Length: 456
Ligand SMILES: Cc1cc2nc3c(=O)[nH]c(=O)nc-3n(C[C@H](O)[C@H](O)[C@H](O)COP(=O)(O)OP(=O)(O)OC[C@H]3O[C@@H](n4cnc5c(N)ncnc54)[C@H](O)[C@@H]3O)c2cc1C
Image (cartoon, rainbow, N blue to C red; front, side, top):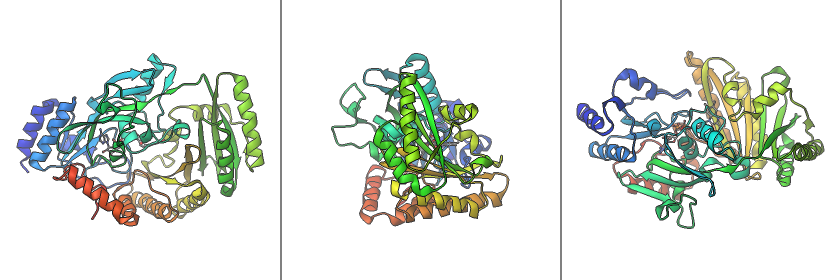
C-alpha cells in the first residue's frame, strides 16, 4: 500500500485538516469503550459532502483499501474498529438537518446528526413532534443507531429504530450514489414501499453494504403529559402473562423491566416501569389505576418511586448511561439480545447467574418492541479498563451470554466479531449463501468494512 499517495489523495478530497495518519490521532479510532482488543487504523478522513464520500470510496477501490464508516462509535462491540485496517470514514462533519416534514412526520438528515442534536432541534422548533432516542449518550448518531436496529422510548409503540427509516441515500461499494425508498422516485422521503424494500440490506450489516449519506427517520406526535407506573416482583416466571396483559390494554408508551444488584434494596427484585402519556392529569390517573389492577392480578406490587428516582426514570435518554459503570473503571460491555416473550424469564434468570458466576454486579433489563412482538433483554458487564483480567472476565461473561441467547432461540444484537461468527454458525446455509452472494456482487473488491459478517 502506497501510504503517502493515499494520504495526499485523501487530502485532495476532504482537505488537509480533515485527514490524518498520525498515530496520536488514530489512537482513539483503534479502540472503543467496550472490551474489544484495539486494532490498527491507517487513516481517518472526515468528509463533508456525499461527493467527498463517493471520492473516498472510489479511491479505496483503486487501492483496494478497506473503509469503515463511523458515527458516534459507541456500540461497545468494536463495530467501527476496522478488522483489516484501512480508512475510518468519520461522518461527524455531515451533520445537517436538511428538512423537517411536519405533516408527513419525518426528518431528513445527514448521518453525522447526533440523537441529542435532533432531539434539541425538535424541542426548540417543533415542540409538538418527537423522535425516539436510545438511552445512549446523546453524542451517538441517529444513523448509527438506526443502522444497528437500536431502540428507544417509542420502540414499544412503533418498533426498533431500523424500522423507523423511510429512506436512505447510499454510496454503494462501487462508488455510485443510490437512493432507497420513496426518495428513489419522489421528492418526498415518506415511505420505504410499495416498491421492493432494500433498506434492510443496510441495517445490521455494519457498514459492509454501503455508506449512508442521508436518511429519513420517522417523527411522532408528542403528548402533553408523561408519567410512569412503577412495580416490583420477585419471580421472573410472571413476566410473560404480566406483559401480555399490559400490552393488551394499549395503554403504554414504553415498557421496561430491570434487575440490578445495586442499590441494595433492588437486589432480588425485578422492577417494571410502564410509561403512560395523556392530555390531562385525569387521563393519566385513569391509566395508572388500570395498570395497578393488572400489576396486582399478575403478582407484581405497585410502588410509588421516590421523586428523585422518578425524575431519573423520566429522563430521555434515560439513566442507563450513568448507572452502568458500577465499578467506576470506565469499561462497560453489553449485549441486548432479541428474544420471543416466552423465553424472557429464563434469559433473565440465566443472565443473573452469569453475572454472579463472574462476580459482576448484575445489571440487566428488557424493553418491549411492539405489543410483545420482540423483547430486547440487555445484559451489561462493567469492568476496569486498566485491568486486563477484569476485561477478560467481562468478555467471558459476554461469550456465555451469547451462547445462552442462541440456545434459547434468541439473537444477539449488534454482535462483536465473535458473536457474528456464532450467529453465522447457527444460520440456515441458504441465508448465508444469500448474504455472501449479495456482498460479493455489490463489493467485488471487498473494501466495505471487511471481516464483518464474513461467511467462511
Ligand atoms: C451507556 C450506553 C447506553 C446505551 N443504551 C442504548 C439504548 O438504550 N438503545 C440503543 O439502541 N443503543 C444503546 N446503546 C448502544 C449504542 O451506543 C447505540 O446504539 C448508538 O446509537 C450507536 O450509534 P453510534 O453513532 O455510536 O454508531 P457507530 O458505533 O458509529 O456505528 C454503528 C454501526 O453503524 C455503521 N455506520 C455508522 N454510520 C454509518 C453510515 N453513515 N453508513 C453506513 N454505516 C454506518 C458502523 O460502521 C457500525 O457498524 C448504548 C450505549 C451506551 C454506551
